[in-house]
Image: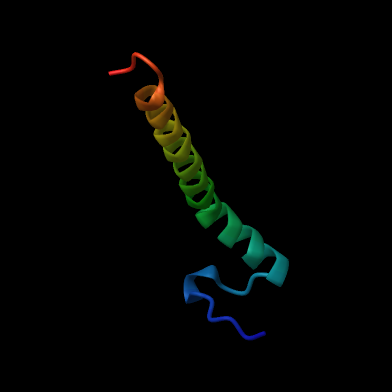
Amino acid sequence: MDLVIPLHLGALHPVEQIATMVLAFGPFVVLGIVIYFRRRAEARDEAEHHDAPGGA
């Protein structure tokens, strides 16, 4: 498995390379997941609000 690793990482051990990538991109992945689920929940709440009897 020959991955193209940016040269600025230098000669890191493969485990160090993976850890570096996870630390660099992991927070953005988690943020995307949180945004996805929050938007789903808000859309569901909004739909329930409009479907409720006597709702606006």
